Image 1 (cartoon, rainbow, N blue to C red):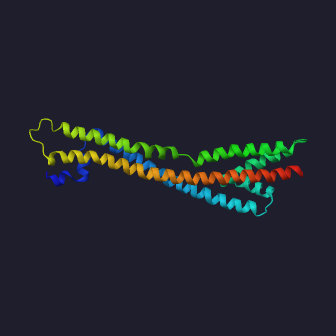
Image 2 (cartoon, helix red, strand yellow):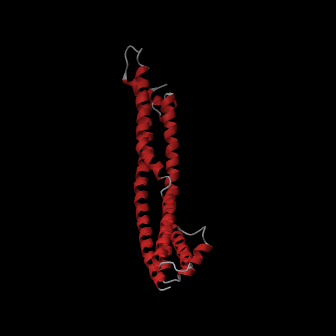
Image 3 (cartoon, rainbow, N blue to C red):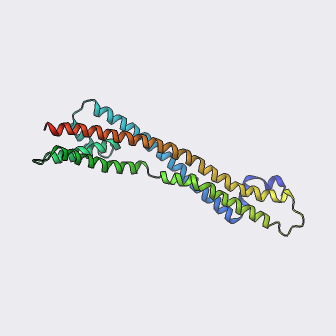
Length: 227
């Protein structure tokens, strides 16, 4: 087999040692999962942003809160995160307002706690799989580097009994080892970029949720006083 054929990418992968092949296979699997989570998270955040904007328009358009709440209850399985926060807060507020002698501050505090609990659940849903992307971005280069070091070590050990080693003899082994690093970077770079972007987007959505909870609490405070 000629040197050109030896340096073919497929031949390099197939001629790699068992450890390097295992590293490559692991990195390819991690990269595939990473891209799957990237696309899923992109759609999730896009939908969350659109549903948040839609509900904010409906809420601040002057619609009756009872009508908004009833609509949220009827479409519970298709509403967005912000609407679920509103539903939880208004449900608790209505429950406490129906009790005689309940202090207005108690009603608002109860609604705020209910909204905070729902807020945490929604944020957990939005942040799901972000830790996997962070781990992929930080660990994959080192896993690929391990495969490279092992492959280079294996290549030089195979030349131990050779009287005169040439570059043509060493190059295929080094090249096949470096593929592991390349695959590790291919898995890590998109994961890091996606993690940073999604973290920024989720932080902005979280700020909108928190601002809404404070503003809605003020609305409930006024309703509790004039009941």
